[in-house]
Amino acid sequence: MRLVQLEQAVAATSALTTLITVPVTLLAAHWNRRSTDRAADATMVAGIDQSQAAVAAAQLQERAVREQSLESARRSAYAGFLSAVDLFVRIVTELPDIPRASRRELLDQKATAVVQARAGVAVLGPAPVFGQAEKVAKQCARLEKLALRRAVLRSAISALESAWCPRNAEWCQDPHHNSAHVAWELLCEWGRLEDEERWEKLDLLEFTLQESQALDAEQVKHVLEVANCVASWDEMIGGFVRDPLLERFQAVRDEFADVAYGSLGLVA
Picture 1 (cartoon, rainbow, N blue to C red):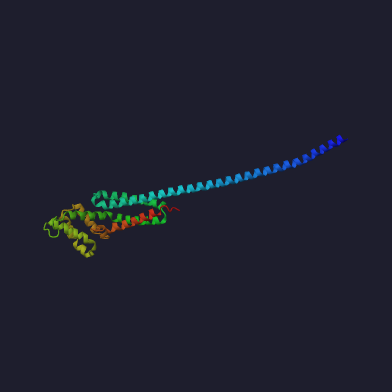
Picture 2 (cartoon, rainbow, N blue to C red):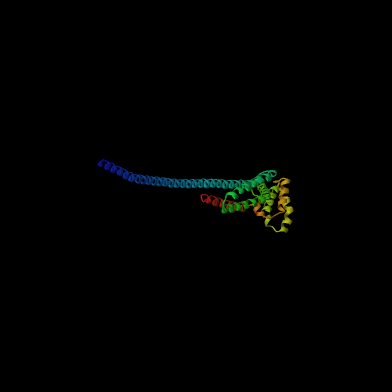
């Protein structure tokens, strides 16, 4: 009897133990799963943060590269424009010493290069820089308009000066030297004469140009053609100490350089 009771007690105890063990196991499994889920969530959040940081860093790097590339392109465009306008003006100043037959072609080449370089600034440059480039281009257009007639006059002026008397040009009695000096004076004041005065002195200008023997017949012809159109005469003659036309160009050219290179590093 006692043996049966003992067996029954053992069986009850085992069942109770089993009942207690199962919930504990289930509870442990539940907390273990929750811990695992939390760790996974934390890992996922950390991964997302890292991904977002990586994307942000890549975007910043891409923007920096893009801005650096744009700044480099702008710098090249500005340098190209300045080089083009400087070469253009150099040709304008050298035209009087270049054979007349070659002047137009050289001038057209350099003027075209200015237009092409200006297009690069128009595409890449911010508004203030392009606005200043337009001022430079406007001065170049003014120079181009006057360049060929200017070359005729300045070439003639230089030739007449070379034909002066080497001693005293004003009191020299040599007819060729004297004619060179008179023709030179006429050309220098031609634009400031009244229309009637120019008409009266036109024959004298032609005679002294021929008599000076400083110019050939073709050159005399071209000087007289220019003398029939006195608009902007002083700009074409230029000054002996100052040259207003080139001074205006240099002023806007330098302003462009200041504005253009001052804008670099401020790329939006």
